Amino acid sequence: MKKLFRRFRKKRQPTPQPSDPLLGMLNMLAVTEEDEIACDQVFAALGEFAELAQRGGDVAHLMPLVAQHLHLCPDCREEYEALIAILAAEEG
Amino acid sequence: MTRDNKTWLADLSQDGELRAAALDDLRQIILRMLPAGLARWLSPNDEHFEPFLHDVAQETLLRVLDRLDTFEGRSKFTTWVYTIAIRIALSELRLRKWQEVSLDGLEESAEPDQAPYARFTDPGPNPEALAERKQAMQKVMQVIDQALTPRQRAVMMAVNVEGVPLDVVAQRLGSNRNAVYKLLHDARLKLKQRLVLEGLPPEELLEMFGN
Ligand SMILES: [Zn+2]
Image (cartoon, rainbow over all chains, first blue to last red; front, side, top):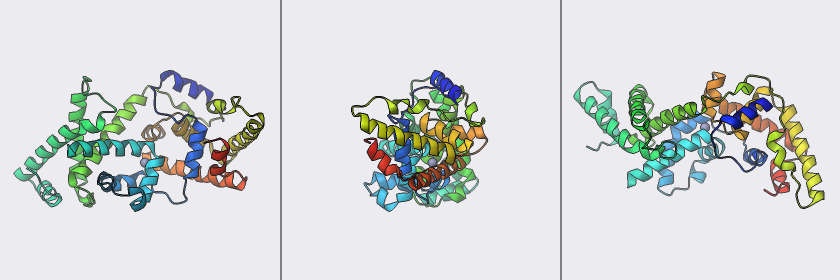
């Protein structure tokens, strides 16, 4: 594992990190639930979620499982942010 | 021409001119709108930008046609198309960005590594609080060590400590993003339950560490 980290440090490009990895992990554990939806279900709901957010809807309340997943999954979160950027551009 | 969801579906579902026209319009929409979504990842001035954009648009159209019957009408049709285009584009960009990085640790049975937590034990202002933190810290490390399988530990380290995208982990493991998320979810649940059992619920730890 040490080797792995060393190699990461050398080659990887900067990515957004929690200020401390362990704090980040504890934060994730704090919001971890028994029932969570995985990426495929989020993908199916993402358009609806983003349009609702765009209209100022209370997504955390109306679609809590999607909101929670986006909090925990960096890949889906990035895609959500990209979608929001497009919808914003679409509105002009 | 603007179409509502029904018209998009009707036009794309048939053979002939209507479909060709709809595909053409959809391609133009993707080419026009996708750059806004990719701005953070790829500059339009990048020489690879244009060819990449066209590749993604083409791939998106194929996937849209292939999955037309899975569109549930829960959003605008074009919004659904954007989600597909974004997923294709970002998945590809993630793999490209990380392709040079070796992730052997994911396949080895990884040993626990103290390095990412080094800052945690840095001297703080209050020696007593520090000792308490250090003890809690060691307990957390021990739980991570005992409760997780080597694979869970390695994936969690890669994603949560090193910021490796789930897509990239999935590719290296010959898996998919959905399965990697489930693996991480299992790992988080197990850790959380063990910490609660040990009298160290994550919420209290966060408080102790002065979140
Ligand atoms: Zn996800």
